[in-house]
Picture 1 (cartoon, one colour):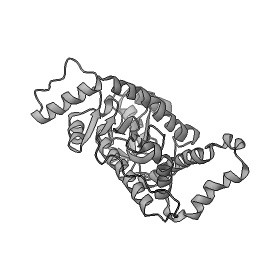
Picture 2 (spheres, rainbow, N blue to C red):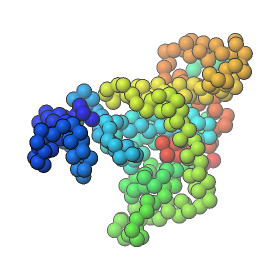
Picture 3 (cartoon, one colour):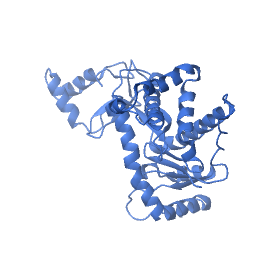
Picture 4 (tube, one colour):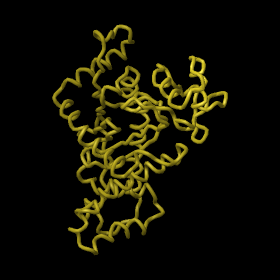
Length: 319
């Protein structure tokens, strides 16, 4: 945060020191400036401040009240298998309601790419036929927390043929639906009715276990919470690399019974080389190959019933 500059090119510490002098401090020290900065109500804005070394980053407030230059990461995860189907990076000042539709559509496109790639790959005469694409005649259901709920999101997802289960945030009094058009009002009422069902409550209880575990693997175990990179493109590459490594662990666990280094001691030595030879032999396929491998590994369990999770968003294809 010390490196950010405003529109006039003034650095943040210099700006705070100037405010301290205006408040009556004579030759304010760094501690005096920090004390004044903590008492100010509105400190920084992305409209007025930016990083000279990383213009794509945005000022974000952490859970403990501190502010940092950050990005917003969203994973799209299959809740039944834990496979990450899309890993996206957005500006930190983008709200959940502004990115949910983009993440869902990206996950849908990735699944289609994996299915198409599986059908075009060379197969032997004894290889089974690829599974049919799921979701062609079924309704896709989306589960998310209350942060994703808005009339615009509900209407847009409904128009794209999705079925939403998004609980409403707490409000003072009841939500006035008479101010919305008839179409939007009908969509909101149907969503609220579905949220109160037992099926919705069961699925929402599963979100924390699946989603938070994946973020713990990537951010804490994988040390991806703090990155020494600049630029949204580079941060996206790093984040997707961690997601691909997580998927590779799922594939190894599916085929070999072990997906982590601690579990390798229980796997025969020759079997440890199999996933690496498989990846190296077809390295040109890149990320699409890894997604396709993940899809192939779980295709028998996922036909007709797929769930995708976007941070705390769950997509499900009902059979």
